[in-house]
Image (tube, rainbow over all chains, first blue to last red; front, side, top):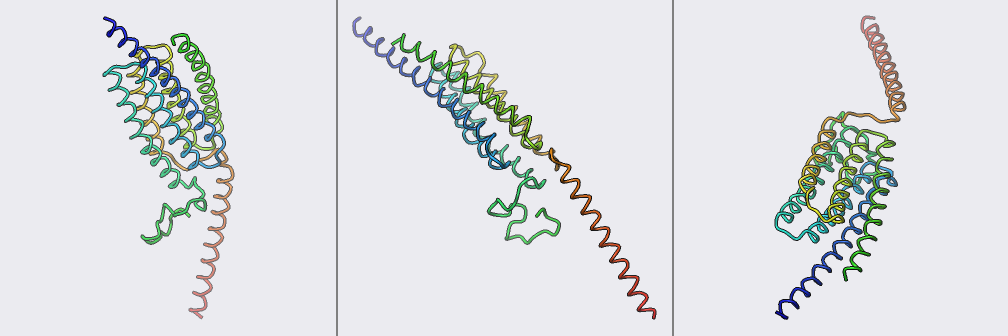
Length: 132
Length: 130
């Protein structure tokens, strides 16, 4: 009897620590989202804005999903959280790459600010009417 | 422990609420001011991500898990929207007046060069006949 009570106290402490860690994760995730939006405002270029928009934002969403998982401790929540995290991790680089490719193709990027010319890479021979 | 957790929860509610609200306001500012369609698509993508964060934080702070499918559908939807915009974007900008002016100047220059070329052709043709 006493052993089970002690065990429950122990688990209560563990759950309390998990809740606390979840709050810390929430604050960190919200701070990372705020960082992303500050980068959105402060950065001068589309590509650097994209850099600010994808990386800290995805990490913030992952941290908040971790907080959800730490608070609702069940298998179904684990499955949904894994689904949302995988969506974020897979779709964010693809969307970012497609958007930067569209930006380069429609000449909205100052190509002097990019190290390699992404439209006409040096190996392939330059197109005549390519975007300079 | 439970009182401490309650205090931590209150602090977290205020901190996360203020940070996410500021986040959304800054993103909406970029959404209004961003000088091209791609900037606006990027900002709307970021706004949907902020919405995901806000719904997740609300779920944690009020202790339910009813809106998890909403999170999954939002994550998928933002990707589809951004990709569609990126596929069908054309060259445009809010300061398109400059671009249009330069296009007009370029057309003028090309037309002048073409006229010059025609003149040269005509002259050389005359020289050949002479």
